[in-house]
Length: 492
Ligand code: GLN
Image (cartoon, rainbow, N blue to C red; front, side):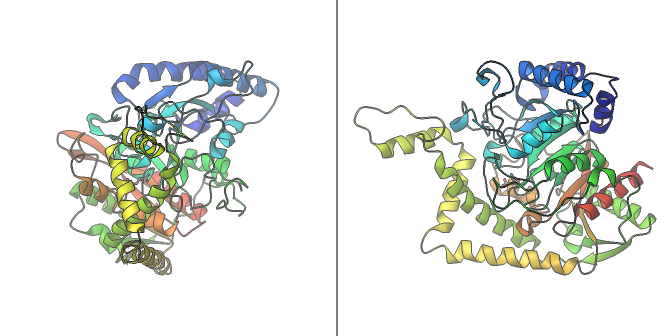
């Protein structure tokens, strides 16, 4: 059972436990469990303990810190710079930011992501970096130079992806809180497969400064947590306008963490017709119906809505995301960033680029760069990229129409429970279909949360299944109240 971040922060604040003792126990637990799970790609014992000591001192001096002593893990596409508060040059404490890619294998970021800095400033203790699909491109955390992450509920199965390391770390009880990033479902789908809460905020809510870009118009950072209130507390800390991210919102953020004690049940819950389609695993379908039943029991009206572009959203997503990735990943050329290939006598600068990128990127990343370059090329732009942008607009409009009829939408997070390692690696299209219920949310820029909602028997294993709640843009208050209502109703 994963401990609550709020309980840890309360204990450290009241000095019932010290941040140092919690950090030590966390590092020891990671040492024991990580060889099987492969959720962490790096831990920082020295830096972590030094940070925990500072927290204990600040608490002793009477400071109040919302995440006092809470151990946090970071997906390894989030930059963590050298620790300048520590004596010495600090570099020895700095972590790498690899994106699970050969090309960034030895990259050390000179600065820290805004979201990460906000957690640190709130008293969190960063314990390590977690595994992911290379550059966030995948749904299983199998496409990593560090090897696959395993699902804590069944080590023969994937943890989901691409934030699979963060989800597995929380599910295994190694940390109460982790950050992930979500471009097309990468927080929500692994949260569902691992049985934890995953929150993808509205596009622009959380600064992306220091998140290695995959598809900039879709990327968003968010928490994976043991329960809804912890996710809300993390959101409180994460959200603020950041001049370093031009898309960062200036809206004032409510105090979500304190509003959840008696959450208001949603009055109308929409269920997309497409969520009850033939492609949904019977266990996932039953979990969804049970969640609907619970909403009905607390007085919500259930209304059927239509998201007719659900299938087209996948196609549009894989055009827009790859197009943006082809541009974002152009910077990894062996000169400005990352691994530089050795050249033979007489080879040119072009050889250097080709060879560095050829050796540095994995197959799926290369596939996406090829696809993305193709859909943007003269002669194909209108047929693919421009058409995908029109579909994106219509996906947005479909959600807007649906929200005229309901306050929140309930849908599956993934079509089936966690699959076996290796089951989909040879079939990219099967892997892409994992995202059918999540990518529309990114295309429309909406906030969505996954709440663990049941356990399904599949292939001899008991696997957690989450459901997804979706709200209109910037309606995190409504989203979290619905998520907390469901969590309480399922626990009752
Ligand atoms: N699975 C999706 C993809 O491969 C989403 C990934 C993500 O959200 N980072 O693009």
